[in-house]
Amino acid sequence: MTAAVRNELREEEMASKGFEPDVKIRTKGYKIGCVGAGMIMAECHLAAYKEAGFPVVAIASRTKASAEKVAKRWGIPTVHDTPEQLIEDRNVEIIDLAFPPDQQPALIRHALKQKHIKAILAQKPLALSLKDAIELRDEAARAGKILSVNQNMRYDQSMRVLKQIMESGALGDVVFAQIDMHAIPHWQTFLEEYDRLTLANMSVHHLDVLRFLFGDPDEITTLTRKDPRTKFDHSDGITVSTMRFPSGVLAVSLEDVWSGPRQDGYKDDQHINWRVDGTKGVAKGTIGWPTGSASTLTYASTETTDGKWVTPSWDTMWFPHAFIGVMEQLQHAVKTGEPPALSVADNVKTMALIEAGYRSIEKGRTVKLSEISTN
Image (tube, rainbow, N blue to C red; front, side):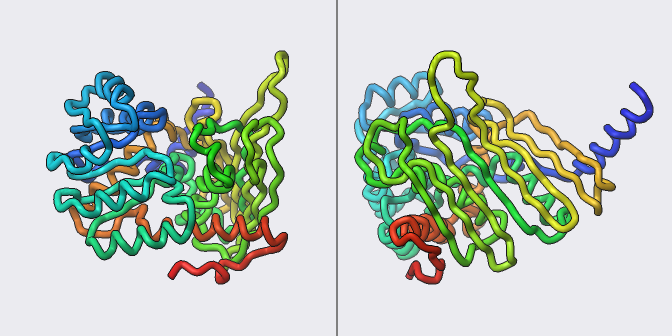
């Protein structure tokens, strides 16, 4: 190894020192009951909880056979006949929901009535409408229960490190940001019954993480067209949203769920890239889930890297490792009495942004967030 290479590696090590791509586990031990046995539960939630040592004591799903199969795989001791029976199980302290958004509110409300339930982790979207989300927020507050929403992209390693780089001042004042998705999501079959598709179920990751990075935008403009490959009826397929934030940041979130032809011989190039430009530096990277790899980040700063490109690295991935952070923040909130990092009150603001995007599509204009009531 040459001296120049050693120096470059040393600079990278110094520049990446102090970054925390994954959360430190501060709290664990609360007994979790899982509702749902589909891909996201079986491959992400439970894999993360096993690695972190979070105790899962029961599971239920729409069909008991599915729950039994997942329970056997992950060593879960109790399988209930129905989600309602699981929620009523006094051995369960935290409810972890992975259920369709049209059915999720009823289960949340059932859990809010149970004295033994300390907290609920719900999937996104929280409900099919902003009105329903607001009602759930207020009902949880009246019940004195912690309701958290699984906005897991905030725990993607590249997004966490990007946030830390921004907060260090290495990028200066951020001017522009973009998320550029050309990838085909796994559309769950229950989505075929809804009139909303991409903005509510895929863009919700990106719009929420832009809120995580830059705060609440003042306005959003969204354009859409149908995805010509998706066979079931839908109003929003490919979406492009532009947001302006109070700081002046202009951000674009593009979700192309078509992502090119599927014919034999076509070399697939699915990807999700992102970039943030500031007055003193630039950070850019990839979200790894389309290729089943770790997300990446590289950045250059006139303040902290002498203008050189530096690439911190990690071995963990968004799926499943981000789900450790999601459940950890909820358990820590139960222990400390502090609001969870992913609070339902904050998620209502993401739901309001989604609603503003749909209004922009419907009205064919920019929509101010002040037009969308969350009271």
